[in-house]
Image 1 (spheres, rainbow, N blue to C red):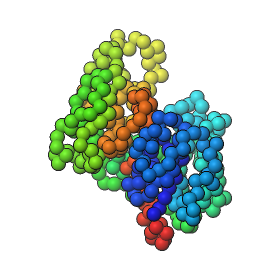
Image 2 (image 1 turned 120 degrees about the vertical axis):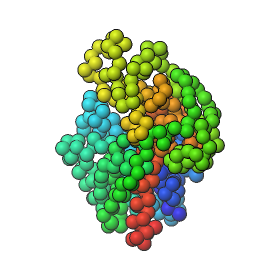
Image 3 (image 1 turned 30 degrees about the horizontal axis):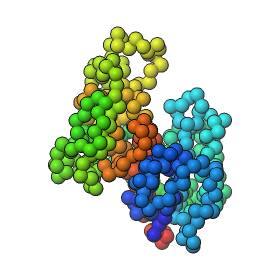
Image 4 (image 1 turned 90 degrees about the vertical axis):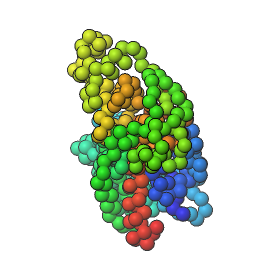
Amino acid sequence: MLYGIDIFSGAGGLSLGAEMAGIQIRYGIEINPSAAKSFTRNHKGAKVLQGDIKDIDPSKLKEGNDPVFIIMGGPPCQGFSLSNTRTRNMQNEKNFLFLEFVRFVQELKPTWFVLENVWGLTNMEEGKTKNMIEDYFGALGYEVNSQVLWASDYGVPQNRNRFFMVGNRLGIKFEFPEPFEKKITVEEAIGDLPDLGNGEMLEKGKYKVPRSEASEYAQLMREHSHSPTQNFVSRNNDLVIQRYRHIKQGQNWRAIPDELMQNYADKGRTHSGIYKRLIADQPSVVISNYRKSMLIHPYQDRGLSVREAARLQSFPDDFYFEGPISHIQQQIGNAVPPLLAKAVFDQIIKMSRHDGQG
Protein backbone atom coordinates (compact mmCIF):
# COMPACT_ATOMS: atom_id res chain seq x y z
CA MET A 1 0.00 0.00 0.00
CA LEU A 2 1.24 3.46 -0.94
CA TYR A 3 0.73 5.82 1.96
CA GLY A 4 0.82 9.56 2.28
CA ILE A 5 0.78 12.45 4.73
CA ASP A 6 -1.13 15.69 4.09
CA ILE A 7 0.19 18.78 5.88
CA PHE A 8 -1.66 22.12 5.83
CA SER A 9 -4.50 19.81 4.82
CA GLY A 10 -7.58 22.00 5.12
CA ALA A 11 -10.73 19.95 4.64
CA GLY A 12 -8.76 17.50 2.51
CA GLY A 13 -9.07 18.26 -1.21
CA LEU A 14 -5.53 17.06 -1.96
CA SER A 15 -6.05 13.96 0.19
CA LEU A 16 -9.30 13.09 -1.55
CA GLY A 17 -7.57 13.31 -4.94
CA ALA A 18 -4.78 11.09 -3.62
CA GLU A 19 -7.27 8.54 -2.30
CA MET A 20 -9.07 8.51 -5.65
CA ALA A 21 -5.71 7.64 -7.23
CA GLY A 22 -5.12 4.78 -4.78
CA ILE A 23 -2.95 6.38 -2.09
CA GLN A 24 -3.83 5.74 1.56
CA ILE A 25 -3.69 8.87 3.72
CA ARG A 26 -2.31 8.05 7.17
CA TYR A 27 -2.07 11.55 8.67
CA GLY A 28 -3.55 14.98 8.12
CA ILE A 29 -2.19 18.09 9.84
CA GLU A 30 -4.37 21.19 10.06
CA ILE A 31 -4.48 24.15 12.46
CA ASN A 32 -8.10 25.25 11.82
CA PRO A 33 -10.52 23.30 14.06
CA SER A 34 -13.48 23.28 11.62
CA ALA A 35 -11.33 22.17 8.69
CA ALA A 36 -9.70 19.49 10.87
CA LYS A 37 -13.18 18.18 11.78
CA SER A 38 -14.12 18.06 8.09
CA PHE A 39 -10.92 16.15 7.35
CA THR A 40 -11.62 13.69 10.18
CA ARG A 41 -15.16 13.04 9.01
CA ASN A 42 -14.25 12.41 5.37
CA HIS A 43 -10.93 10.56 5.63
CA LYS A 44 -11.84 7.67 7.89
CA GLY A 45 -8.49 5.87 7.80
CA ALA A 46 -6.39 8.94 8.62
CA LYS A 47 -5.31 10.29 11.98
CA VAL A 48 -5.76 14.05 12.17
CA LEU A 49 -3.37 16.22 14.15
CA GLN A 50 -5.07 19.54 14.81
CA GLY A 51 -2.59 22.23 15.81
CA ASP A 52 0.35 24.36 14.78
CA ILE A 53 2.68 22.43 12.49
CA LYS A 54 5.69 24.03 14.19
CA ASP A 55 4.84 22.03 17.33
CA ILE A 56 4.65 18.66 15.56
CA ASP A 57 7.59 16.26 15.46
CA PRO A 58 7.57 14.49 12.06
CA SER A 59 9.54 11.52 13.45
CA LYS A 60 6.42 10.58 15.46
CA LEU A 61 4.60 9.98 12.17
CA LYS A 62 6.86 7.10 11.14
CA GLU A 63 5.11 3.73 11.26
CA GLY A 64 7.46 0.78 11.56
CA ASN A 65 9.44 0.12 8.42
CA ASP A 66 6.71 1.39 6.08
CA PRO A 67 8.28 4.00 3.82
CA VAL A 68 6.34 7.23 3.25
CA PHE A 69 5.39 7.23 -0.41
CA ILE A 70 4.34 10.88 -0.57
CA ILE A 71 4.05 14.08 1.47
CA MET A 72 1.61 16.63 0.12
CA GLY A 73 0.41 20.03 1.19
CA GLY A 74 -0.27 23.65 0.44
CA PRO A 75 1.48 26.00 2.88
CA PRO A 76 -0.71 29.09 3.59
CA CYS A 77 -0.50 31.42 0.64
CA GLN A 78 -1.48 34.83 2.00
CA GLY A 79 1.97 36.18 1.18
CA PHE A 80 2.18 34.64 -2.27
CA SER A 81 -1.34 35.40 -3.47
CA LEU A 82 -1.73 38.10 -6.12
CA SER A 83 -5.13 38.91 -4.61
CA ASN A 84 -3.42 40.08 -1.43
CA THR A 85 -1.26 43.01 -2.53
CA ARG A 86 -0.84 44.41 1.00
CA THR A 87 1.16 41.48 2.38
CA ARG A 88 2.61 39.95 -0.76
CA ASN A 89 6.31 40.07 -0.06
CA MET A 90 9.00 37.86 1.44
CA GLN A 91 8.72 39.64 4.79
CA ASN A 92 5.31 38.01 5.38
CA GLU A 93 6.11 35.35 8.01
CA LYS A 94 3.50 33.02 6.52
CA ASN A 95 5.67 32.77 3.42
CA PHE A 96 8.19 30.86 5.48
CA LEU A 97 5.76 28.13 6.50
CA PHE A 98 7.00 26.29 3.42
CA LEU A 99 10.13 25.65 5.51
CA GLU A 100 7.94 23.47 7.74
CA PHE A 101 7.05 21.50 4.63
CA VAL A 102 10.79 21.16 3.89
CA ARG A 103 11.38 19.99 7.49
CA PHE A 104 8.86 17.17 7.11
CA VAL A 105 10.34 16.08 3.78
CA GLN A 106 13.85 16.16 5.23
CA GLU A 107 12.87 14.05 8.26
CA LEU A 108 10.52 11.53 6.62
CA LYS A 109 12.30 11.20 3.25
CA PRO A 110 9.22 10.38 1.17
CA THR A 111 9.68 8.95 -2.30
CA TRP A 112 7.61 11.85 -3.69
CA PHE A 113 6.30 15.20 -2.53
CA VAL A 114 3.66 17.51 -3.94
CA LEU A 115 3.67 21.16 -2.89
CA GLU A 116 0.65 23.12 -4.10
CA ASN A 117 0.10 26.86 -3.99
CA VAL A 118 -1.25 29.94 -5.78
CA TRP A 119 0.23 30.70 -9.17
CA GLY A 120 1.50 34.06 -7.87
CA LEU A 121 4.40 32.17 -6.32
CA THR A 122 5.90 31.69 -9.79
CA ASN A 123 6.66 35.36 -10.37
CA MET A 124 7.33 36.49 -6.81
CA GLU A 125 10.69 38.27 -6.55
CA GLU A 126 10.99 37.72 -10.33
CA GLY A 127 10.97 33.96 -9.90
CA LYS A 128 13.63 33.90 -7.17
CA THR A 129 11.17 32.58 -4.57
CA LYS A 130 10.25 29.54 -6.68
CA ASN A 131 13.91 28.89 -7.48
CA MET A 132 14.82 29.13 -3.80
CA ILE A 133 12.18 26.55 -2.84
CA GLU A 134 13.36 24.21 -5.63
CA ASP A 135 16.94 24.58 -4.38
CA TYR A 136 15.91 23.52 -0.86
CA PHE A 137 14.49 20.27 -2.22
CA GLY A 138 17.33 19.79 -4.67
CA ALA A 139 19.77 19.89 -1.75
CA LEU A 140 17.80 17.04 -0.15
CA GLY A 141 18.29 14.89 -3.23
CA TYR A 142 14.99 15.48 -5.01
CA GLU A 143 14.47 15.87 -8.74
CA VAL A 144 12.00 18.77 -8.93
CA ASN A 145 9.66 20.04 -11.59
CA SER A 146 6.89 22.63 -11.33
CA GLN A 147 4.04 23.96 -13.41
CA VAL A 148 0.86 26.01 -13.19
CA LEU A 149 -2.19 23.84 -13.96
CA TRP A 150 -5.73 24.90 -14.86
CA ALA A 151 -8.39 22.91 -13.01
CA SER A 152 -10.74 23.15 -16.00
CA ASP A 153 -8.22 21.09 -18.02
CA TYR A 154 -8.67 18.12 -15.67
CA GLY A 155 -12.41 17.61 -15.32
CA VAL A 156 -13.13 20.40 -12.81
CA PRO A 157 -15.94 22.81 -13.82
CA GLN A 158 -13.93 25.88 -12.81
CA ASN A 159 -11.32 28.17 -14.38
CA ARG A 160 -8.95 28.01 -11.43
CA ASN A 161 -5.17 27.83 -11.78
CA ARG A 162 -2.83 26.42 -9.16
CA PHE A 163 0.92 26.02 -8.89
CA PHE A 164 2.24 22.49 -8.37
CA MET A 165 5.80 21.57 -7.45
CA VAL A 166 6.47 17.82 -7.65
CA GLY A 167 9.68 16.14 -6.54
CA ASN A 168 10.97 12.59 -6.21
CA ARG A 169 14.06 10.69 -5.03
CA LEU A 170 14.00 8.33 -8.01
CA GLY A 171 15.84 10.65 -10.39
CA ILE A 172 12.72 10.91 -12.59
CA LYS A 173 11.92 14.15 -14.38
CA PHE A 174 8.22 14.38 -13.57
CA GLU A 175 5.97 15.06 -16.55
CA PHE A 176 2.72 16.80 -15.72
CA PRO A 177 -0.48 15.21 -17.01
CA GLU A 178 -1.81 16.21 -20.41
CA PRO A 179 -5.02 18.29 -20.37
CA PHE A 180 -8.30 16.47 -20.95
CA GLU A 181 -10.24 17.24 -24.12
CA LYS A 182 -13.59 18.03 -22.52
CA LYS A 183 -14.45 21.03 -20.35
CA ILE A 184 -17.20 20.68 -17.75
CA THR A 185 -19.74 23.51 -17.58
CA VAL A 186 -21.61 25.04 -14.64
CA GLU A 187 -24.87 23.57 -15.95
CA GLU A 188 -23.37 20.07 -16.11
CA ALA A 189 -21.99 20.54 -12.61
CA ILE A 190 -24.99 21.86 -10.66
CA GLY A 191 -28.03 21.61 -12.97
CA ASP A 192 -29.50 18.61 -11.10
CA LEU A 193 -29.30 20.23 -7.66
CA PRO A 194 -32.45 21.63 -6.01
CA ASP A 195 -33.83 25.11 -6.60
CA LEU A 196 -33.33 27.21 -3.48
CA GLY A 197 -34.35 30.58 -2.09
CA ASN A 198 -32.28 33.37 -0.57
CA GLY A 199 -31.14 32.25 2.89
CA GLU A 200 -32.54 28.73 2.55
CA MET A 201 -30.89 26.13 4.80
CA LEU A 202 -32.02 22.80 3.36
CA GLU A 203 -30.02 20.03 5.04
CA LYS A 204 -31.32 17.24 2.83
CA GLY A 205 -32.82 17.97 -0.58
CA LYS A 206 -33.92 16.06 -3.66
CA TYR A 207 -32.16 15.78 -6.99
CA LYS A 208 -34.14 17.24 -9.90
CA VAL A 209 -33.58 14.19 -12.13
CA PRO A 210 -32.73 10.51 -11.65
CA ARG A 211 -28.99 9.79 -11.66
CA SER A 212 -29.21 8.08 -15.06
CA GLU A 213 -30.56 11.31 -16.60
CA ALA A 214 -27.99 13.62 -15.00
CA SER A 215 -24.80 14.77 -16.74
CA GLU A 216 -21.81 12.45 -16.68
CA TYR A 217 -20.13 14.81 -14.20
CA ALA A 218 -23.19 14.93 -11.90
CA GLN A 219 -23.42 11.14 -12.01
CA LEU A 220 -19.82 10.97 -10.81
CA MET A 221 -20.57 13.41 -7.97
CA ARG A 222 -23.65 11.39 -6.96
CA GLU A 223 -21.97 7.97 -7.05
CA HIS A 224 -22.16 7.43 -3.28
CA SER A 225 -25.08 9.71 -2.44
CA HIS A 226 -28.87 9.32 -2.57
CA SER A 227 -29.70 12.96 -1.85
CA PRO A 228 -27.84 16.29 -1.86
CA THR A 229 -26.97 17.57 1.62
CA GLN A 230 -25.84 20.99 2.87
CA ASN A 231 -27.97 22.99 0.45
CA PHE A 232 -27.18 26.09 2.51
CA VAL A 233 -27.47 29.59 1.02
CA SER A 234 -26.29 32.66 2.95
CA ARG A 235 -29.07 35.20 3.42
CA ASN A 236 -28.59 38.51 1.61
CA ASN A 237 -30.50 41.68 2.36
CA ASP A 238 -33.13 43.07 -0.01
CA LEU A 239 -30.73 45.58 -1.57
CA VAL A 240 -28.32 42.83 -2.58
CA ILE A 241 -31.16 40.78 -4.11
CA GLN A 242 -32.26 43.90 -6.05
CA ARG A 243 -28.72 44.18 -7.41
CA TYR A 244 -28.70 40.52 -8.44
CA ARG A 245 -31.78 41.06 -10.64
CA HIS A 246 -29.91 43.49 -12.89
CA ILE A 247 -27.02 41.14 -13.62
CA LYS A 248 -27.13 38.75 -16.57
CA GLN A 249 -24.90 35.68 -16.98
CA GLY A 250 -21.26 36.71 -17.31
CA GLN A 251 -21.91 40.25 -16.06
CA ASN A 252 -20.65 41.70 -12.77
CA TRP A 253 -21.27 44.69 -10.51
CA ARG A 254 -20.92 47.07 -13.49
CA ALA A 255 -24.42 46.04 -14.63
CA ILE A 256 -25.94 47.34 -11.37
CA PRO A 257 -27.59 50.81 -11.65
CA ASP A 258 -25.71 53.58 -9.85
CA GLU A 259 -28.60 54.27 -7.48
CA LEU A 260 -28.21 50.75 -6.06
CA MET A 261 -24.44 51.15 -5.56
CA GLN A 262 -24.31 54.33 -3.51
CA ASN A 263 -22.65 52.65 -0.53
CA TYR A 264 -19.61 51.82 -2.70
CA ALA A 265 -17.41 54.87 -2.07
CA ASP A 266 -14.90 54.13 -4.85
CA LYS A 267 -16.33 51.84 -7.53
CA GLY A 268 -13.09 52.17 -9.47
CA ARG A 269 -11.38 49.94 -6.91
CA THR A 270 -14.08 47.26 -7.02
CA HIS A 271 -12.76 43.89 -8.23
CA SER A 272 -14.23 42.58 -11.50
CA GLY A 273 -15.15 39.31 -9.75
CA ILE A 274 -17.61 41.01 -7.39
CA TYR A 275 -21.29 40.30 -8.09
CA LYS A 276 -20.44 37.93 -10.93
CA ARG A 277 -23.27 35.80 -12.30
CA LEU A 278 -21.99 32.45 -13.50
CA ILE A 279 -22.37 31.47 -17.16
CA ALA A 280 -24.28 28.19 -17.43
CA ASP A 281 -22.53 26.79 -20.52
CA GLN A 282 -18.95 27.53 -19.42
CA PRO A 283 -16.75 26.47 -16.48
CA SER A 284 -17.20 28.63 -13.39
CA VAL A 285 -14.99 31.53 -12.38
CA VAL A 286 -12.77 30.86 -9.35
CA ILE A 287 -14.60 29.59 -6.27
CA SER A 288 -12.48 31.22 -3.57
CA ASN A 289 -14.44 33.02 -0.85
CA TYR A 290 -17.60 32.93 -2.98
CA ARG A 291 -19.72 34.48 -0.21
CA LYS A 292 -17.59 37.61 0.05
CA SER A 293 -17.32 37.97 -3.73
CA MET A 294 -21.12 37.53 -4.07
CA LEU A 295 -21.02 34.95 -6.86
CA ILE A 296 -24.52 34.54 -8.28
CA HIS A 297 -26.33 31.40 -9.43
CA PRO A 298 -26.69 31.37 -13.25
CA TYR A 299 -30.53 31.39 -13.17
CA GLN A 300 -31.68 32.12 -9.62
CA ASP A 301 -31.30 35.50 -7.89
CA ARG A 302 -29.24 34.24 -4.96
CA GLY A 303 -25.75 33.26 -3.96
CA LEU A 304 -24.36 29.76 -4.41
CA SER A 305 -25.25 27.04 -1.96
CA VAL A 306 -22.59 25.08 -0.08
CA ARG A 307 -23.31 21.97 -2.19
CA GLU A 308 -23.17 23.92 -5.47
CA ALA A 309 -19.81 25.44 -4.55
CA ALA A 310 -18.52 22.01 -3.50
CA ARG A 311 -19.64 20.57 -6.86
CA LEU A 312 -17.81 23.36 -8.71
CA GLN A 313 -14.69 22.40 -6.75
CA SER A 314 -15.28 18.69 -7.65
CA PHE A 315 -16.09 17.51 -4.12
CA PRO A 316 -18.54 14.59 -4.41
CA ASP A 317 -21.93 14.84 -2.72
CA ASP A 318 -21.03 12.43 0.08
CA PHE A 319 -18.25 14.78 1.26
CA TYR A 320 -19.70 16.52 4.32
CA PHE A 321 -18.21 19.75 5.69
CA GLU A 322 -18.12 20.61 9.39
CA GLY A 323 -18.48 24.00 11.11
CA PRO A 324 -20.59 27.16 10.78
CA ILE A 325 -21.57 28.08 7.21
CA SER A 326 -18.93 30.85 6.99
CA HIS A 327 -16.23 28.33 7.94
CA ILE A 328 -17.55 25.81 5.42
CA GLN A 329 -17.54 28.41 2.65
CA GLN A 330 -13.91 29.21 3.45
CA GLN A 331 -12.95 25.52 3.53
CA ILE A 332 -14.44 24.98 0.08
CA GLY A 333 -12.82 28.10 -1.36
CA ASN A 334 -9.39 27.24 0.07
CA ALA A 335 -9.40 23.64 -1.13
CA VAL A 336 -7.48 22.07 -3.97
CA PRO A 337 -10.09 20.65 -6.39
CA PRO A 338 -9.93 16.88 -5.79
CA LEU A 339 -10.16 15.96 -9.48
CA LEU A 340 -7.23 18.27 -10.29
CA ALA A 341 -5.25 16.62 -7.48
CA LYS A 342 -6.24 13.16 -8.74
CA ALA A 343 -4.82 13.91 -12.20
CA VAL A 344 -1.43 14.80 -10.64
CA PHE A 345 -1.41 11.74 -8.34
CA ASP A 346 -2.47 9.41 -11.17
CA GLN A 347 0.55 10.62 -13.12
CA ILE A 348 2.88 10.14 -10.13
CA ILE A 349 1.72 6.55 -9.67
CA LYS A 350 2.02 5.86 -13.40
CA MET A 351 5.60 7.17 -13.48
CA SER A 352 6.48 5.27 -10.26
CA ARG A 353 5.26 2.01 -11.75
CA HIS A 354 7.23 2.65 -14.89
CA ASP A 355 10.28 3.01 -12.66
CA GLY A 356 9.37 -0.16 -10.75
CA GLN A 357 8.50 1.67 -7.50
CA GLY A 358 4.68 1.54 -7.51
